[in-house]
Length: 388
View 1 (tube, rainbow, N blue to C red):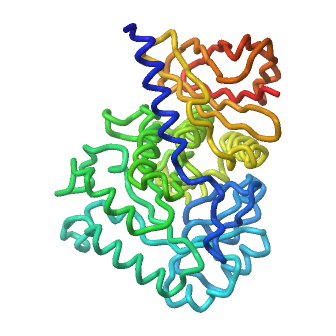
View 2: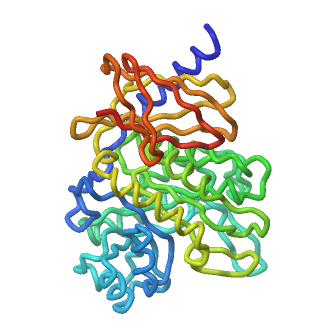
């Protein structure tokens, strides 16, 4: 068997596995949860001041995740005025506003899988045990079963060697237990700005984490994930707009049903809303979000199991893909999973004859013959195809 043939088989298996996940936008089970609307794809921002909600709304963001020392009446009023939804903590204040439709979910902590601080100067203890997370989840659900509970986990989801887990480093078996303590499972890893050589620049860790969460939830719960777009703690490196677009689409292609932009920056100085201060990145993120919103009905439709086989002429650059059908058209979303060039051959099932393949947003048309077409991918490139 050739290496190219082996790669094609692996990709087919991956695509088929991802189709087992819950349908994006399937929130009908929660009376006060996210909109159960095919046109709604959650695009959120992490822990921001609601006074800036209108600016984030202009950037295509529709949900806040986390509220500093909230929720308060003013925070909810600001969000409501901007048409923004929120997932916040179910503290005493949160339950006081349980009738407010602005709140569409409850936040169940952040990175409990990491080693926990013992206090200033006292070092770190073990992570919060998964059984404690599950117990806390039950209490949140008992207090309000009308909204989903979101749990955000750390980079150990994607990187087993993450030392920040302390005594539980290299223990991925914890995670199938953690995800029992939520309705929406999320995680964060920021490879472009990462300071460890094992991860730095390897954007595919984002997709790996998403894929693992889909597996660990057995495809029965929505999976969201965080996206970097600032320097965070790295004064010398941050994701480029091209890399951010890649991280977004590789997340979606691997099964993510919601995005959380992390926009804080500590270097060279602290900036809580650094995305809003970076005109180039803000423009790029806005364009990505606009495209997702346009394609939301497609993204919220079922993925076609085995809908495409993809081979790459560069064995070092696998091409990941996802196939959807909506309103009479076939959509293929594809991403280069490494930072090098490749030519991909895509073979779609059930598309006979010669057909025009529109490359969405690139002002070009290529031709498929009996469902087969080729395209070039640069480092970390994304191509979105539509065949009528």
